[in-house]
Amino acid sequence: MANTQPLRIKTISEYHQIMGLPKPEHPLISVIDFDLIKRLPMDESINIMFDFYSISLKRNFNGKMKYGQQVYDFDEGIMFFISPGQVFGMEIDKGTHLKHSGWLLLIHPDFLWNTPFAKTIKQYEFFSYSVHEALFLSDKEEATIIGMMQSMEQEYKSNIDKFSQTIIIAQLELLLSYAERFYQRQFITRKIANHQILDRLEQILTEYFNSDNLLKRGLPTVQYIADTLNISPSYLSGSLKMLTGQSTQQHIHDKLIDKAKEKLSTTSLSVSEIAYELGFEHPQSFSKLFKTKTELSPLEFRASFN
Image (cartoon, rainbow, N blue to C red; front, side):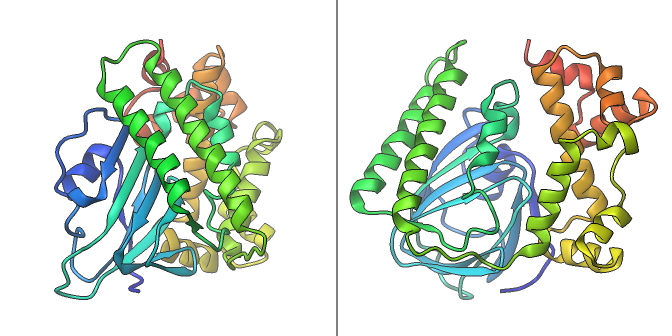
């Protein structure tokens, strides 16, 4: 599997375009039949990173997939979960026609931001590099998952109204609850892949952003992260670049923007108050970074939920 810098796909529309699919009917959610995808974005092998959640149910894939440090074959039905910012690799033999069947559900985090599920989706541990095993499904379990994906597709393809988002998120939560049940059945003998740097980085940033450190100390520095991990800043950045295509600073900023979106969509705090809580001395600096990362000002982002 080649260690090339990943192809970053920012939107679901961009994914459809790259894969030669019709324009999605909803910009933030899409259910895709794998029979419609006949090729990879480039020959042989590719590393990819999404800015959205991916839940797939694959069968008969005539290639290999690498996630974290684990390589998977898809000789039977497998369910697979990928979070925004995670890198996975795909590889097929040169000149081979791509074969696979199954279903793919894509959900952009912005679809969830004004709901409690924006937080709780992160608690499902199968959205983690540290999970060693993909989820193997029985025929009956496959039918259950596919039925729920098709129900979500039917909902967003029908006339969108004020109930649509609530219904789709309820269906997503039900799907993930079933997946959790199936994982518990499978993980009687459970193995964890060795992906310590990324796992520990996520843990350190989560603990830092959920404490009062932002108010007291401001944003964590690259040196602070490296010291906490007991490695050098250059080794940390090199490892992250290879695994995710992003620097340590970019990981810090992505975590910051996640926290900012959460506060903008779930609280009535002013932009200045949010900037202060996130460790910014000047609200203008926060607003500039937010717009750079999201292409929206904080107020424009908040207005999108009203």
